[in-house]
Amino acid sequence: MLIEVKVPQLSESVSEATLLTWNKKVGDAVSEGENLIDIETDKVVLELPAIKSGVLSKIIKADGAKVGSGEVIAQIDTEAVAAAAPKAKAEVAAAAATPSARKLAHEHDVDASQLKGSGKHGLVTKEDVLSAVQQPATANPAPVAAPSGDRPEQRVAMTRIRQRIAERLLQSQANAAILTTFNEVNMQPVMDLRARYKDTFEKKHGVKLGFSSFFVKAAVHALRKFPVVNASVDGTDVIYHGYFDIGVAIGSERGLVVPILRDADKMSFADIERQIAAFAARAKDGKLTMEELSGGTFSITNGGVFGSMLSTPIINPPQSAILGIHATKDRPVAENGQVVIRPINYLALSYDHRIIDGREAVQFLVAIKEFLEMPGLVLLDL
Image 1 (cartoon, rainbow, N blue to C red):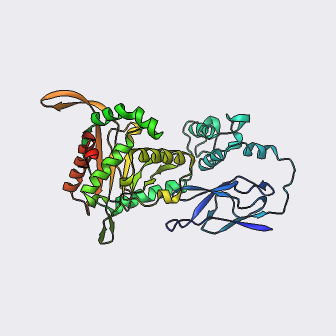
Image 2 (image 1 turned 180 degrees about the horizontal axis):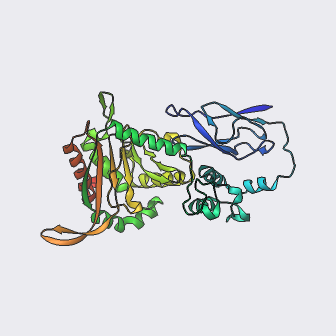
Image 3 (image 1 turned 90 degrees about the vertical axis):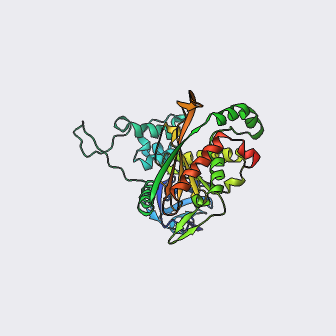
């Protein structure tokens, strides 16, 4: 019996996707639930598992093809038996790579079969591919525009995710009146609180107490005070959201992704830390779903993890504001007429001036600052 392999239903905002690399070739046996191919949309990479066991009898859409929801891309014969013919040497080598390694190799135009695998039994891992990408001249030479040697160039097509990121950033700058306001916060109270309770917190909740949950809680606190920062523009209307879906920017190998903490106001510190850790793990493996990446009323981005001191983050449309966090560094500050050293973090709020006035933006950041410098506010519900 022939069964059609179809592209899963994509979200309404996604018109098409790109097939990456087939994990099977025609004539190979497939097992129910086994990943046949990864499908990249402008938001996420999806796995397409086989719905029945059998033999892959036909591939209709090859690697790199553009496809839409429900499109037939292959066929599985559930009654056939896979041929036992030996594979060619190149085919064996190509198969000796993890799915994530094959996916990454496809994105960077790297021939995984030419890499020396560091995994078990010589399996090519994602780390091997990353090494090849970082050292293309020795790991995987590619055609260059200037082959003379001392001024090489390489043209690589953007992934769909990277194209979408570029489109959204340009859209944000073109369609919003973006301004950025700054403030500084003394992180000592949060650091002291964290140091005092982190062991007890981890023992009780099974997750580390980081700084992310404090910033999310501080954002929700400020958004309650200034609802317009949680709003969005729709034509000539302003939509005020009665909920707090906070996007948390996470850097991944495919680019920046912003998964959403739904109803962040109802989440505990442990819930937030646990969810962000799960997002980061799934982003690394390309397992975030479109639902996890859709929506959001406000975003937080932390350039401090990469060492950034100050930046002007770009709004994630259709949101109207984004909070930028940076590296916490010991700095001299004046307190009560004395110069003291304090761990200071510079905060940046980029906002859409069409609906958010400077006064509200500044006061919003002040509310963030007050919360972080007096974290007991959350205990007293102030």
